[in-house]
Length: 228
Ligand code: DC
Image 1: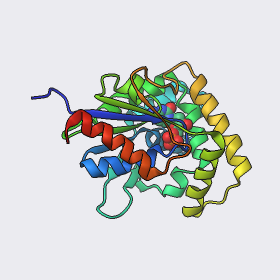
Image 2: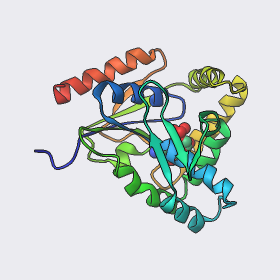
Image 3: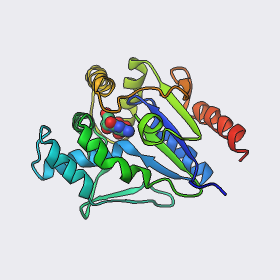
Image 4: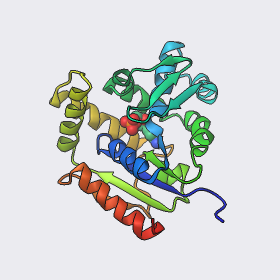
């Protein structure tokens, strides 16, 4: 018998489709899903609520360690997210300003350390799909299978624009391109667990691929590896 549940990591920059793709794959396999970006986003919202500034590393790390977060999976509806007893609206959590605030505090090593065991606790049977920036490099370096998704900046901005439109959030393509570039540069440049392909991750350039095609490609690799 395995000592620990298997984990598959899916990392990549913002708006590569990794969130949607990871969700579909986790559902198909019946495995648990860790959207690690949501943790950094929730921490950013909580810090704002408690007036903890982005230069207060100790305050942010303490908040990260004790933050009350609940993910309530639902059959045919998006997962409900509860932060300190309040329901968080997806439009608020996933907008670009929350993403930027998350990216700023995510550069603080003490914050990343405080969220480490919380993320590893998601690794339960029958298995975990872990999605983020450092899943394959720092959180689950021993993952059975690792993927790293890329796409050009203009394609990612287009995808994000459509996603925001669907959520009823107004944005412009040019502003999104600037915001995504800034966020990627920050995520790649930080010293603590930067956005980086793990040496043993499979690289998938999603520029000319649909979500369905990327899912099929990943499921194929999973089938080869696990004989599921
Ligand atoms: O995946 P996302 O857009 O929800 O992530 C928001 C920010 O959180 C991202 O810009 C950087 C940070 N993040 C991180 O540093 N490490 C992760 N594993 C996931 C997200």
